[in-house]
Length: 551
Ligand code: AMP
Ligand code: MG
Image (cartoon, rainbow, N blue to C red; front, side):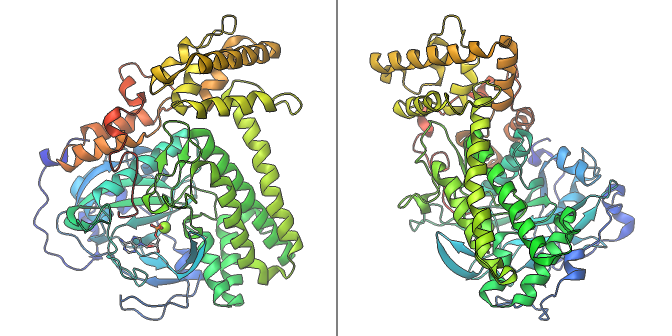
């Protein structure tokens, strides 16, 4: 995509209320979108039509996106577009910008904000809801798949509480890039179709230190089978509305878990559903740890009931391997959401979900059994993932514990780039296992004391012996490693560089980077800089090593 400032300027925008688009002016592909909005059709809605902040005793409120002055499309995911049968290149950027910034509501869309609650940093926070997200509608594509379109940053809703319902380019670009990168990494995630500048300024105090500044506003159009969160169940349980809770769970099973519908016994059906959510969440966490992702705000309202990564805010990617690292400045004091604690937090969040659906089950024991399964399942899937990271066909219960314990101890003992370490490990010659192929992964080679070097080489010898004992051709080990260890992850400082450039109106770096991130496991000659470890200047720069929720 060309830099937006080189493109045709958007016409001065005068329409101040969203309206149904005139069919004659809509391009063919948008016009062909078919909507079937089950959320609205099958669940109870808020009887109040006005858009003001309030408590809502229903599943959703109808709300229109707030029109913006000069929308400009600056990012488009051809892969997400394909899910909706939309073209890889938009036919009319202005028209698409109008739709995906929320200025024009297409026929068939039924915009809503949904009601949910949540535990934030361990405390029940009451009603939260889509404060800056608006579901436009549910698209049914040619293959019969159902995809909900959701605008993030398209203006206030009844759930906006004291905030503005908007989002800035900085955080929107980060969400756009990371959603798509995660998909290509093979990690379950919500998708991002488009990134649109609103042409409006949005004021944010990035470091919460009394220095508010205007930033370019933006809207991301997210795409997922549904955006249902643990918090959706929690709010009805907290209000002791068992009938709405049951209705919502039945709806969720019917739309998102149709394979579970056939279980005629309601209690067994709900337990089967909870077991499935638990299993998906365990798998999700194994992926996060495998690729070095730190979500940053694992509140229960940010946990997808579908086991997807959802709500990219102050997330970060592990650079040097540090299980205690959290990217979120709001989390700095307690580090609740630090890298290594994420699986435990996920289980705690599942416990909140279990509490929420308890009124429909009436016994704690089967719910507890499923929660305990989380730990077992997580441990076993993590072992397989770790084995794959070392190119081993499986984890050997009786002999591999020491191999992995020493590996992770070594990674933590000098500043080591996790991504490069695992990637470079594939280059180690098993017959002459030296540390040389790994050197590029260390942030300061000088910090590699002779003792650490020796210990690392001893570990390499152990590893080489283990891998040789498998008896497979080396190419098998290497290809297994390269399929488990990405070379390109959306590194924090690269996001900041893409943001800095996009804020000047140039999206060249964003476009090039997105293309690289589509093949994260492949070496891409000429694109090495997108795999480089964090440069020194980024070590303490806001946006690179620490992020705030102010987005
Ligand atoms: P988060 O933890 O950032 O996903 O958001 C927690 C809650 O705050 C959710 O209900 C969001 O919709 C809401 N929220 C976050 N930012 C804004 C904003 N700028 N305007 C309105 N609501 C917001
Ligand atoms: Mg959220």
